[in-house]
Image (tube, rainbow, N blue to C red):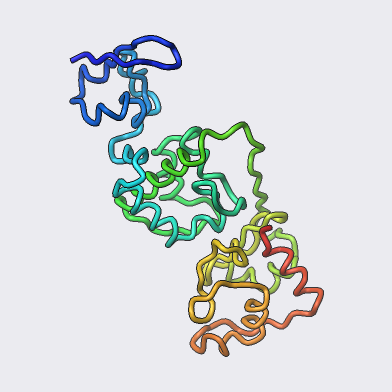
Length: 254
Protein backbone atom coordinates (compact mmCIF):
# COMPACT_ATOMS: atom_id res chain seq x y z
CA UNK A 1 0.00 0.00 0.00
CA UNK A 2 1.31 3.44 -0.91
CA UNK A 3 -0.20 6.54 0.61
CA UNK A 4 0.39 10.04 -0.76
CA UNK A 5 0.71 12.94 1.68
CA UNK A 6 0.75 16.67 1.14
CA UNK A 7 3.99 18.13 2.51
CA UNK A 8 3.37 21.84 3.35
CA UNK A 9 7.09 22.55 3.78
CA UNK A 10 7.97 21.19 0.38
CA UNK A 11 4.79 22.38 -1.28
CA UNK A 12 4.33 19.01 -2.95
CA UNK A 13 2.81 15.56 -2.61
CA UNK A 14 5.14 12.99 -1.04
CA UNK A 15 4.90 9.21 -0.74
CA UNK A 16 4.44 7.53 2.65
CA UNK A 17 6.64 4.46 2.33
CA UNK A 18 5.99 3.41 5.96
CA UNK A 19 2.83 1.67 4.75
CA UNK A 20 4.86 -0.72 2.65
CA UNK A 21 5.70 -2.55 5.91
CA UNK A 22 3.21 -1.30 8.50
CA UNK A 23 -0.57 -1.38 8.75
CA UNK A 24 -2.09 2.12 8.62
CA UNK A 25 -3.77 3.59 11.70
CA UNK A 26 -4.95 7.06 12.72
CA UNK A 27 -4.44 8.23 9.14
CA UNK A 28 -6.61 11.26 9.78
CA UNK A 29 -3.93 12.65 12.12
CA UNK A 30 -1.33 13.08 9.38
CA UNK A 31 1.84 11.27 8.41
CA UNK A 32 3.49 8.47 10.40
CA UNK A 33 6.35 10.86 11.21
CA UNK A 34 4.00 13.19 13.09
CA UNK A 35 3.77 10.64 15.93
CA UNK A 36 6.79 8.41 15.36
CA UNK A 37 9.39 10.70 13.78
CA UNK A 38 11.52 8.84 11.28
CA UNK A 39 11.33 9.61 7.58
CA UNK A 40 8.30 8.36 5.65
CA UNK A 41 9.74 9.49 2.31
CA UNK A 42 12.43 6.80 2.03
CA UNK A 43 12.43 3.03 1.58
CA UNK A 44 15.81 2.68 3.29
CA UNK A 45 15.03 1.24 6.73
CA UNK A 46 18.00 2.82 8.51
CA UNK A 47 16.88 6.26 7.35
CA UNK A 48 13.17 5.63 7.76
CA UNK A 49 13.71 4.54 11.38
CA UNK A 50 16.14 7.33 12.30
CA UNK A 51 15.22 8.82 15.74
CA UNK A 52 12.08 6.67 15.73
CA UNK A 53 9.58 7.04 18.60
CA UNK A 54 8.24 3.59 19.45
CA UNK A 55 4.52 2.95 19.58
CA UNK A 56 4.44 2.78 23.39
CA UNK A 57 5.37 6.48 23.51
CA UNK A 58 3.46 7.65 20.43
CA UNK A 59 0.45 8.75 22.49
CA UNK A 60 2.38 11.91 23.39
CA UNK A 61 0.58 13.74 20.57
CA UNK A 62 -2.79 13.12 22.25
CA UNK A 63 -3.21 14.98 25.58
CA UNK A 64 -6.11 12.66 26.49
CA UNK A 65 -4.17 9.43 25.99
CA UNK A 66 -3.74 7.16 29.02
CA UNK A 67 0.05 7.40 28.74
CA UNK A 68 0.07 11.20 28.93
CA UNK A 69 -2.44 11.29 31.79
CA UNK A 70 -0.61 8.63 33.82
CA UNK A 71 2.75 10.24 33.10
CA UNK A 72 1.55 13.66 34.24
CA UNK A 73 0.33 12.14 37.49
CA UNK A 74 3.71 10.46 38.04
CA UNK A 75 5.53 13.73 37.34
CA UNK A 76 3.43 15.45 40.00
CA UNK A 77 3.89 12.65 42.54
CA UNK A 78 7.66 12.62 41.95
CA UNK A 79 7.86 16.44 42.01
CA UNK A 80 9.96 16.54 38.83
CA UNK A 81 9.36 20.29 38.56
CA UNK A 82 11.26 21.07 41.77
CA UNK A 83 14.40 20.78 39.60
CA UNK A 84 13.17 20.63 35.98
CA UNK A 85 10.94 22.56 33.61
CA UNK A 86 8.13 20.40 32.20
CA UNK A 87 5.36 21.73 29.96
CA UNK A 88 6.70 25.27 30.45
CA UNK A 89 6.45 25.10 34.26
CA UNK A 90 9.04 24.35 36.94
CA UNK A 91 12.36 25.32 38.46
CA UNK A 92 15.51 25.55 36.37
CA UNK A 93 17.98 23.80 38.67
CA UNK A 94 18.61 20.97 36.19
CA UNK A 95 17.86 20.22 32.53
CA UNK A 96 14.83 21.57 30.69
CA UNK A 97 12.71 18.47 30.02
CA UNK A 98 10.76 20.29 27.32
CA UNK A 99 13.83 20.28 25.08
CA UNK A 100 14.16 16.48 25.15
CA UNK A 101 11.48 15.94 22.49
CA UNK A 102 13.70 17.83 20.06
CA UNK A 103 17.20 17.07 21.36
CA UNK A 104 17.09 13.49 22.65
CA UNK A 105 15.38 10.13 22.16
CA UNK A 106 12.98 8.14 24.36
CA UNK A 107 15.66 5.50 24.87
CA UNK A 108 18.16 8.02 26.24
CA UNK A 109 15.48 9.56 28.47
CA UNK A 110 14.69 6.06 29.76
CA UNK A 111 18.34 5.45 30.68
CA UNK A 112 18.52 8.80 32.51
CA UNK A 113 15.42 7.95 34.56
CA UNK A 114 16.43 4.35 35.30
CA UNK A 115 20.00 5.29 36.23
CA UNK A 116 19.68 8.79 37.67
CA UNK A 117 22.54 11.25 37.69
CA UNK A 118 24.22 12.41 40.88
CA UNK A 119 21.87 14.50 43.08
CA UNK A 120 18.80 13.13 41.29
CA UNK A 121 16.69 10.88 43.52
CA UNK A 122 16.25 7.26 42.42
CA UNK A 123 12.48 6.83 42.13
CA UNK A 124 12.70 3.12 41.20
CA UNK A 125 10.14 3.52 38.44
CA UNK A 126 8.65 0.33 37.03
CA UNK A 127 8.91 -0.30 33.28
CA UNK A 128 5.27 0.78 32.63
CA UNK A 129 5.82 3.89 34.77
CA UNK A 130 8.86 4.77 32.67
CA UNK A 131 6.78 4.42 29.50
CA UNK A 132 4.12 6.77 30.86
CA UNK A 133 6.54 9.33 32.27
CA UNK A 134 8.52 9.49 29.02
CA UNK A 135 5.25 9.93 27.11
CA UNK A 136 4.34 12.87 29.35
CA UNK A 137 7.80 14.41 28.92
CA UNK A 138 7.45 14.23 25.13
CA UNK A 139 3.96 15.75 25.40
CA UNK A 140 5.38 18.60 27.48
CA UNK A 141 7.81 19.35 24.68
CA UNK A 142 4.93 19.72 22.24
CA UNK A 143 3.09 22.03 24.64
CA UNK A 144 6.18 24.21 24.98
CA UNK A 145 6.90 24.29 21.24
CA UNK A 146 10.32 23.75 19.71
CA UNK A 147 12.86 25.68 21.79
CA UNK A 148 15.20 28.23 20.33
CA UNK A 149 18.88 27.77 20.97
CA UNK A 150 19.45 28.36 24.67
CA UNK A 151 22.38 28.60 27.04
CA UNK A 152 23.28 25.11 28.32
CA UNK A 153 22.37 24.45 31.95
CA UNK A 154 25.55 24.09 33.99
CA UNK A 155 25.48 22.34 37.35
CA UNK A 156 28.65 22.24 39.42
CA UNK A 157 29.61 19.25 41.53
CA UNK A 158 32.55 19.30 43.93
CA UNK A 159 34.82 16.28 44.10
CA UNK A 160 34.09 14.01 47.04
CA UNK A 161 35.36 15.43 50.31
CA UNK A 162 36.03 18.86 48.78
CA UNK A 163 32.67 20.59 48.90
CA UNK A 164 32.65 24.21 49.97
CA UNK A 165 32.02 24.51 53.69
CA UNK A 166 28.82 26.55 53.73
CA UNK A 167 26.05 26.29 56.29
CA UNK A 168 24.07 23.72 54.30
CA UNK A 169 27.03 21.37 53.96
CA UNK A 170 27.92 21.72 57.64
CA UNK A 171 24.45 21.51 59.16
CA UNK A 172 22.35 19.58 56.61
CA UNK A 173 24.63 17.85 54.13
CA UNK A 174 25.27 14.78 56.26
CA UNK A 175 21.66 13.63 55.78
CA UNK A 176 20.37 15.65 52.81
CA UNK A 177 21.32 16.60 49.26
CA UNK A 178 20.40 19.79 47.43
CA UNK A 179 20.76 21.30 43.98
CA UNK A 180 21.30 25.03 44.47
CA UNK A 181 21.12 27.71 41.82
CA UNK A 182 24.48 29.30 42.55
CA UNK A 183 26.56 26.63 44.28
CA UNK A 184 25.47 23.52 42.35
CA UNK A 185 25.17 20.19 44.11
CA UNK A 186 25.60 20.25 47.89
CA UNK A 187 25.52 17.58 50.59
CA UNK A 188 26.20 13.85 50.56
CA UNK A 189 23.30 12.50 52.60
CA UNK A 190 20.97 9.77 51.42
CA UNK A 191 19.11 9.07 54.67
CA UNK A 192 16.75 12.06 54.44
CA UNK A 193 14.76 13.77 51.65
CA UNK A 194 16.38 15.62 48.78
CA UNK A 195 15.77 19.32 49.51
CA UNK A 196 16.14 20.72 45.99
CA UNK A 197 13.51 23.40 45.40
CA UNK A 198 12.28 23.15 49.01
CA UNK A 199 10.89 26.68 49.26
CA UNK A 200 9.29 26.67 45.80
CA UNK A 201 5.72 25.85 44.85
CA UNK A 202 6.92 22.67 43.13
CA UNK A 203 8.22 20.92 46.23
CA UNK A 204 5.81 18.37 47.78
CA UNK A 205 3.49 19.84 50.42
CA UNK A 206 5.02 17.78 53.21
CA UNK A 207 5.04 20.23 56.10
CA UNK A 208 2.58 19.90 58.98
CA UNK A 209 -0.90 18.84 57.72
CA UNK A 210 0.33 18.76 54.11
CA UNK A 211 1.20 22.43 53.94
CA UNK A 212 3.81 23.88 51.62
CA UNK A 213 7.21 24.84 52.97
CA UNK A 214 8.13 28.49 53.35
CA UNK A 215 10.85 30.36 55.22
CA UNK A 216 8.88 30.72 58.46
CA UNK A 217 7.85 27.05 58.54
CA UNK A 218 11.41 25.96 57.81
CA UNK A 219 12.65 28.09 60.72
CA UNK A 220 10.08 26.47 63.04
CA UNK A 221 11.08 23.03 61.82
CA UNK A 222 14.79 23.58 62.39
CA UNK A 223 14.21 24.97 65.88
CA UNK A 224 12.19 21.96 67.08
CA UNK A 225 11.36 19.24 64.49
CA UNK A 226 9.60 16.98 67.01
CA UNK A 227 7.14 19.71 67.97
CA UNK A 228 5.81 19.38 64.42
CA UNK A 229 6.44 15.69 63.72
CA UNK A 230 6.85 13.78 67.01
CA UNK A 231 8.31 10.64 65.44
CA UNK A 232 10.98 12.37 63.36
CA UNK A 233 14.60 11.36 63.86
CA UNK A 234 15.88 14.82 62.98
CA UNK A 235 17.57 16.80 65.72
CA UNK A 236 17.10 20.57 66.24
CA UNK A 237 19.45 22.77 64.22
CA UNK A 238 20.41 26.01 65.97
CA UNK A 239 21.52 28.68 63.52
CA UNK A 240 22.92 32.13 64.13
CA UNK A 241 21.12 34.96 62.27
CA UNK A 242 23.84 35.19 59.63
CA UNK A 243 23.79 31.39 59.15
CA UNK A 244 20.02 31.47 58.71
CA UNK A 245 20.31 34.14 56.01
CA UNK A 246 23.02 32.14 54.27
CA UNK A 247 20.84 29.00 54.33
CA UNK A 248 17.92 30.91 52.81
CA UNK A 249 20.19 32.21 50.05
CA UNK A 250 21.35 28.68 49.25
CA UNK A 251 17.92 27.05 49.29
CA UNK A 252 15.97 29.76 47.42
CA UNK A 253 15.61 29.08 43.70
CA UNK A 254 14.14 32.43 42.53
